[in-house]
Length: 514
Ligand code: BG6
Image (spheres, rainbow, N blue to C red):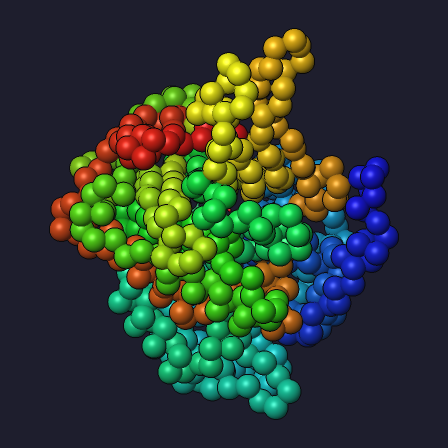
């Protein structure tokens, strides 16, 4: 990096070196659903703009409703036109770039079909022929097994010499350990592991990938990155949105299943994994699985002290004003005890992290939208400053800001100018946008591109998924038995008081997100 903050040419050249992905048909099951409209299409549009798709690339949307290619194209165009940078952030320009969009639009096709009927897959086989294909399951999880069975029965996942057939599976991957194991066993009886791409969209976020670059591409951090120097770590994913129209899904899912074994554990794994031997997909995924497997199993008693579940009640949001309680949201039971917030304290049983608590929290309708990882370093060992006892000094904290602003800040103490030695907390900031051109991105661009080129590094292997569920299973069991009672918090606040109490028992407090 040059001192002026400009990107040196070799870095710029590297960024430009990605080649268009091989020709392929991307079949999207659930083509009329939200995921397709909100994330996949904008991501494909961005890939079209970046010239990373082959001229022979096509998309075949499959869904139940009847309709023509033109209807499908029209619906996608309307949706794309409704996005603006301030809402979705998918576009660099204020309006749709007509060149990028028309390139994509002419490649959009549609086929009506029932995901459970062999006729659909017969018709699909006729359309696809022998070329490369990706089957993207943008559907409710109850269809995952059925669609894969049908694809298999129709011979659609058989890879002929020199071609690929890959399946992309969205979350939720199972709803507990047993169901995740069953689903893995089921799909692995019909597909090879290397044909399966289990998505966790957090891994598509640039800043999440950057955690590895920070840790393993620099010499100064890794020597400190262990129990000798780190006191504790806080991982926060707070959202301001409520459950929106997803009441039905949320009632059977809740914040724990929705965010923890997947997104939160990906952040945890990136922060705590050992350096892999290489950036080979399996080397990285093995290190991640290893550290998640090392999470100390919670006993029923641990769950009561180390987990806090919360649910939002009516409150006031900065931007939206007064909002209703979770139990008044559409499709939510009036007496629901499903959590919209969860905080947990985890320990990792390995040489590097023994004794270091990891505090994780995530919730809806919280005061701010913020995803961050805060590494709290141990206090200086000795109070050499008159009038500033060591326990009053601000501890050093390094915060990796992932969302909505991307950067890193380091908090430390500096001497306030003057005759007396008085230490004051200061903060050193690095913002990605000061150094790099941040292209609007949904996070799905990298993931779709990686499926197309066959790079599974950023996707979960069966063992990664099962390790995540293993760690949260004791909590699910406790809740099923009526334990781990729900606490309330007012919308617009930072979660229930019980979560603060959990940290104060350890003599710590949550960082104010920001
Ligand atoms: C999804 C969850 O996987 O991730 C949502 O189902 C959550 O409930 C979302 O809002 C958060 O993702 P992001 O990218 O908006 O932080």
